[in-house]
Image (tube, rainbow, N blue to C red):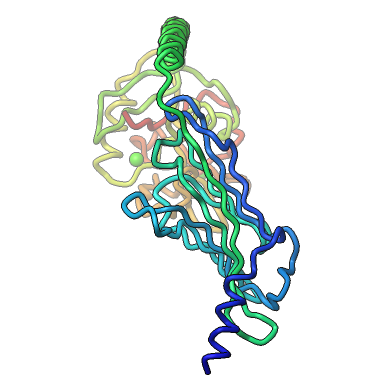
Length: 333
Ligand SMILES: [Ca+2]
Ligand SMILES: [Ca+2]
């Protein structure tokens, strides 16, 4: 029993080889001036003499409170299929692994605490199935603060801050003038669009959050061009859902007395025998047809107008009608 214990102890103590390497970069840091510290722990060959199988690679450093013991910073556990990194002990920085043989810790802006003694340890099983480990050490040194260098760095930082703040001011000025120009252009565009709208349409008062726009004269003899014109101004060919809406529109249309017109296209069309709203694509439930309409005259009447002759009730009509008629947009406010 004692002999076998001794054998294990000897193995534990004796296994330390260049197959296991720890590197620190840089090996001397100056907190506040050194940008970063990298500690790399790797097994340079797959096999450490006498170690039949590695099951973990551990990076530790001397504890701040107790110089005689190490705290584990990161553990890379080997597994036939995957390796896991336990980074819960790392206060900051990041970890990476390359295959199953390499762990690296990086500290941006290292502090005095990071100037320490680091240990890279490979844990595994010996050829006789005993637990053994191999270790490699490296130290990161530090200097007492160099006041001159710190002052230089401070001056350099102040200069950089000043330059950055100046270029930020320039960017802000450019942005402001660009934004002003853009706002002017948008306002101009809205004004022009508004003027175009007024020149194209008679505008109704607001009814249930929308206005109706009656085309001033026949701008198109094709109903889908009329629909596109309504869409350009943010609406659609009027879709009438209730007798209240119908009455409001009839009143509005009735009082327009520029040039004579007999009918007004609305956004309703025949679709496989069903009267469907063009924009909403739903079947219209409200269909106040005029006397003996819809009659599908010459089997060519698939669109709908409000007909002056029947007090603005519906009449089915060609979608390419070529007479004096108007169309009516419905545009939410
Ligand atoms: Ca409507
Ligand atoms: Ca008809």
